[in-house]
Amino acid sequence: MPSSARRSRLRSRRAVLAVTLVPLLAACGGGASSSGDAGGADAVRGTGGSVAATSPAPSTSVAPPAGISYGPWLRPTSHFLDRGSSKAVLVEFLDFECEACGAVFPVMEQLREQYKGKLTYAIRYFPLDGHFNSKRAAYAVEAAARQGRLEPMYRLMYTGQKDWAERQVPTDDTFRGYARQLGLDMTRWEADYTSDAVKQRVDADLKDAAALKLKGTPSFFFNGKPFEPKSVQDLQRTVGDAVA
Image 1 (cartoon, rainbow, N blue to C red):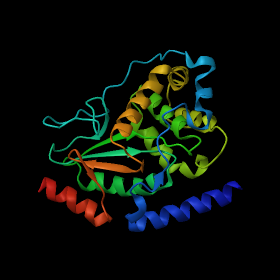
Image 2: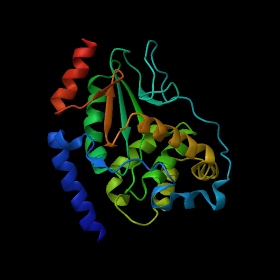
Image 3: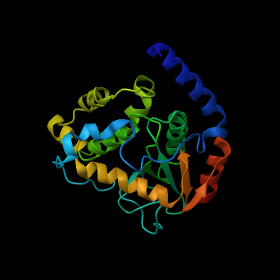
């Protein structure tokens, strides 16, 4: 499919999804990439995938508040983007190639701004089968996290999604371009991107998603319980009531 047609189709779908939010829950499905790498992503890691990470595993992007309940939906080592109240903890299992996740991204950005300092928001990796580059995208974000740049890379994956999603060829060069755009140490980023340590970090989230029997993305948990908002207003109201 020509790139212009693909971008137009993605924009149209995302516009519809963002308006209603109703189909967003598990709108991308098919199960996690639990056995092997979707789209042959093991090729990213070179022969045997034996390259060691040159960067230490990152701590959470933002220190979580005290009093949070942990379990397979959320780990102390999960990536927290916002620290707020322990009474309003929203966790999103996401796939960067999922068009529904791309549609909900601006909704989440608005919600984060609206409840800044009140909402605690964390993300978990959940690349799905059927998305050729979803694991590559997760590896790219995690490699950026090891240089303290998780959130900027997370944003680029969604704002640039139309340029790389739904391709049936590796988009490593696109992700390298994002890393350069962020001014990352490219030697470190390349080593981390192809490392066992980064793969294991993504796989740990996938293991939790499997334990929770999640079927698609985006999948939300609010205060440790599955949460399926039926509208933007429902999402806002639930968070607002929790922090009132």
